[in-house]
Image (cartoon, rainbow, N blue to C red; front, side, top):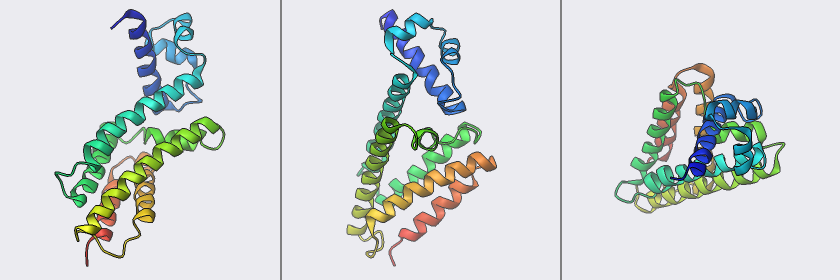
Length: 196
């Protein structure tokens, strides 16, 4: 990797970590420069402003999520739909536990902080959450078709509720400092789906 590309990656990596830990607005450009060990002129060689960097961080995180959760779990037809949904909860539980329940969801955090005041962040976050909802809905439909889930499920509404529940549970883990809300959410949502 070329030196200028390494500097760009260091900036993105430092910003992603700081935005997740502290929030976008409380993180200053000086914080990012200090963490990345990159000089100001080098930053402006790669990014026009902090907002452009934030959008790049969001794009990277969304792509990782797409690879790991959507394609890696929700679209993995080698497992049953119920098992795939359970694995999403397991992944969330592992992630929040690894951060000692302190940081929350990077997407949910950005949505809460910037969704109401920054149109481009709101638009991109809406696209991200819609893609996640679409993947959950496809999984739910497959479960219904296989007789694994209840036939009376409204799959679109439930997909939205599934993601809302996860985001709310992650917020509560951050508030309470333990994983109980994710575990309770997993049990309640998966029980709700079961075929009668």
